[in-house]
Length: 195
Image (cartoon, rainbow, N blue to C red; front, top):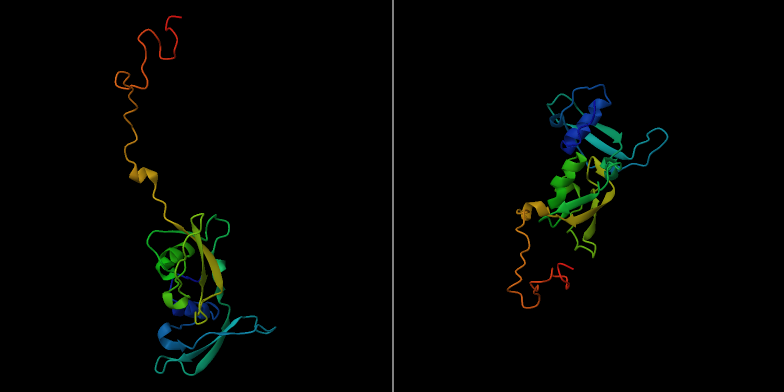
């Protein structure tokens, strides 16, 4: 069973628990989770996160259960084989929260404003780019670490603005231009047309 990271974090953790427990029946409504904590991996448990799940009374289970798992570094969602995967074009976005729909679509994840450190997008440098660090907060059940995004202003396609491309052409009127006239007996190059 592949984990669908476009779902909310609770559903993702439940999916992970079910995947590793032979698809035993467990739903979001049957347990609550405490905050995730950093866990130092050991030889026995090679995981970086520990979380306590507590069963909801009357929902089929009782008592707490501790789970160990690895949260996913944000960089793992970036396809490094595709150019510009860390570059985003923006139109009116001013914060990372505004950029979340593009981020989620590109990386097939479901980051929410409460799971990131929200920041203003800084001014562009002299090359037309700005860098901003996207960081998952420590309370995220699924994501961890940071990635640096490169932001650039949305470029409007010239073809969407300049609609008329069959131009009328230049017209030369030799009679009205006092700076350049062609003598009738020359070809305009300063020598006799018949020579």
